[in-house]
Image 1 (cartoon, rainbow, N blue to C red):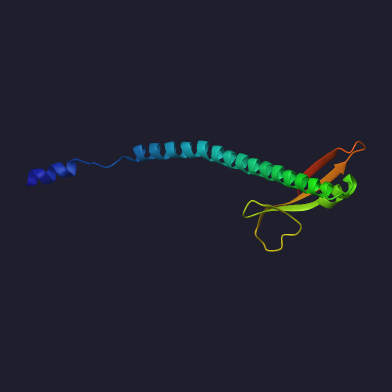
Image 2 (image 1 turned 135 degrees about the vertical axis):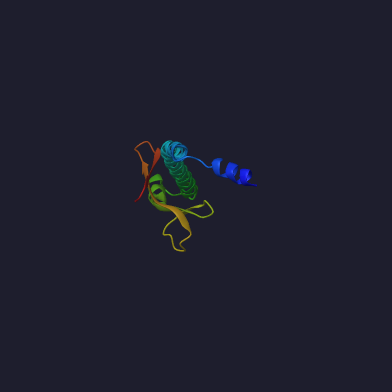
Length: 129
């Protein structure tokens, strides 16, 4: 029994301070490398989402412009009718006007529809801050 107790006291199974410091240093190094990569990926995702929203707003404005033209409006009147602020709601639908119910997740996007002398339409969409 004495021998067993003596052996257990001599056999230290824990980690040394140096080993623990090395493990902590390795973890810190991995965090230093991973955090900027993760935040960069988040920034890229936000940018892609914003570009998608702008594309959707342009598409909706173009459809509204076509609807106005089909109703008999002049190109300038149709461009004036579709110009304004647009929002993206929780269902990913693009809505023109004011965000009345608070369900908007993106916007406002300001749309300017411009008609040149040849009757060509150009949509300029800018995100308002």
